[in-house]
Image 1 (spheres, rainbow, N blue to C red):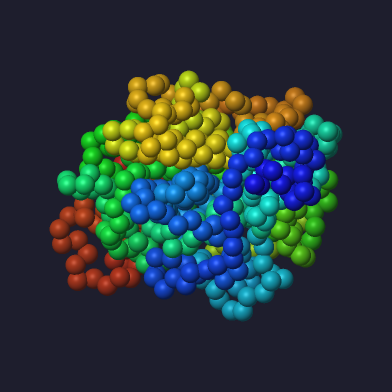
Image 2: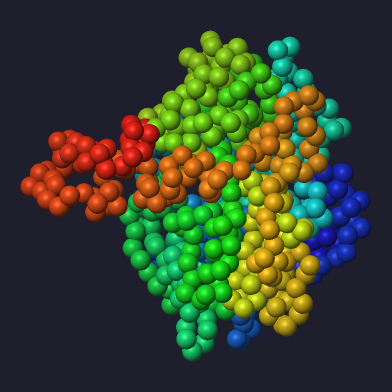
Length: 576
């Protein structure tokens, strides 16, 4: 048992502060791990190293099947736990291209070879490790306090997905300079080795690559005879890259109905009202769960900028919250995290304050916001002379805006997961588990997976599982001193300003600004101009543009039509 071996195997890789807690924890049977790889020829799977570790479980005849919709840590944690319980699992998730991670998304970028070509990441020239940097575009690190999550992090460390960030210099920046927090105040801080998405990738290997489908779940139909679910998906045929807005839908796609049938469905999406990626159900009870989420979920925007330098910056910290900056919420030396060393290149991640990100939540203003955030970084820390050492790359997506970056509502009454017994549909995510953080997402997923295992055998539901959709949601009361997420056990910088995230009227600030969900407005991706999208073309007067080529004159006519027909066009056209 992993926990039982804590004193002999896992303690060298774990903080001493956890030693006594883990050694005293009750042992749980763990499944055998062996090196293996199934060669996948289907285009639905991606290739991995033949030395990948994978947990092998032989499902009994007649084993229940479950479809997990999502691409983040909640989805993969639920999949792994259900796989342990003997379910046949299928994960359907999409983060752009063939990657998973959700808001724990990471990027690897060759400063000399990689370019953005529309929504596609392409390679121009020969790649070089010396020019390659790695950085996280969402969650930067995490802490662990809940015993269920502590055990899970212990396993991640033993599998080599995660390591403790050794002695990071954390504090705040005032007019007098950097004021560090004492190391005795800090809980263990963890990060994925080589990127936060390494955790999701590791769990893919555990359950098996053939269990994962990189696609957008669209609709679950119900078989009238068996009552089981059949899923139609949208497959990415262009290997599109992570886009700024629009639900991150594939640029080129094809619709496919899966041959599989599912007894259960788990929704582990960090999405909200009228989101194009929010799956629909034919089953009326299951659709009530979707409407329950659409009615109650609310998010705030997260803006992240990554800067790369040829020369190390003379800053005495790894994590810093500036007090005097209205633009900057948090600064992280990304290249100091485990497995993120860029050699001669130094990487910094700058996270905007909540108010600043909300101010620049539209495509027109996104680039202006990123430019202002970059200028604020050099101005706040007095680094003007170091601008000449900043590395740039044409079309590099170092600036990212997450319309659904941080949930601001959660389930009330201490509930951490949702399960509808009539439909056999469940929901797990950080907005179920509490404040926005990795711990909340994982605890929610573990709770729901165990609930499904109990339901399969006719057992009772745990008190933490919501089974009736009549419980009100409540604002998340925890302030956000570290801007990007909640970190259980991590102290607040003294006298540092606290941020309580506002409640948008609709699902997110971008939705409020536009009057409609950004995914419905912008269609596929913000890489396309609004007047080039099919939704807009279908609304144009008949005969417009016929007989013309696809040059600038043709697009100009579409642009003029779009400007006339779309009330918010002035807000979105120039920056989209």
